[in-house]
Image (cartoon, rainbow, N blue to C red; front, top):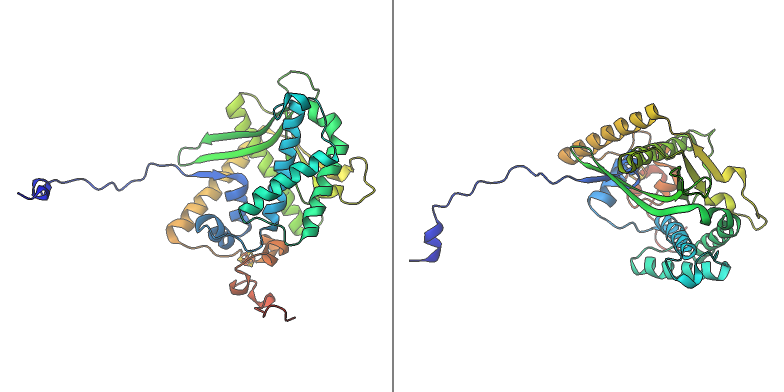
Length: 311
Ligand code: SF4
């Protein structure tokens, strides 16, 4: 008897449901989808690597180098450097380490000047903020997540900072941005600032779920405001403080749920349209770097294929 014949009457019920919950993050999913569903589908659902990963390079570089600076000060890299603020040369060493790691993953700046520009921002930040900030850092890359029933909401807070340097449980959540501060008087700038505030409100809710109490405030630090050789102290435009109101946090969570529902609908229907007003919502910089721009129903008239070397 053929061994297969022994099982030919076996009836195994087909599994029709998938109980695995997908993870959604504030920045990589919800804010990316809101900016442009078409680009989000290309990079996050279909996993196409962007041809111009400069935005990712700057963001990753800022976060990873400052994380190393915090680790050095806390003594978690070596006891010998505990309580020491890195100098410019040490920041350059951390920069070179991160640069090599990012390049190994195909993430590079579009020209060498961009890399040097980011290095200068990091060195200036370290000189201006290190002395006051590093002793107050309680944790870095603080991971948060919450089961929202249908899905898992997750996020990573760049730094938890004690306002006083004491061991009290009072804590601020800080997020580093590599960009300049968006201009509030422009439609797009206002929208980006709203997105950043939304991010901090969601992180605060997640923080409460993990730790049992709310942070005292959210702080967004725009390192792009430190451009310019002459800057030796913090410009007021570099910091945006986000008040954390209970009702606003609940609204932010509700709005997060709504966007996740829209993403799920897009997935079910495989419909990922660009925003109806194109670059006004996606941002001109995002469209300029978008690999889909020459076929985009909203923006293709502004972009043309060209032969390399031609104008
Ligand atoms: S060109 Fe702009 S609007 Fe069009 S798909 Fe790309 S990011 Fe979206």
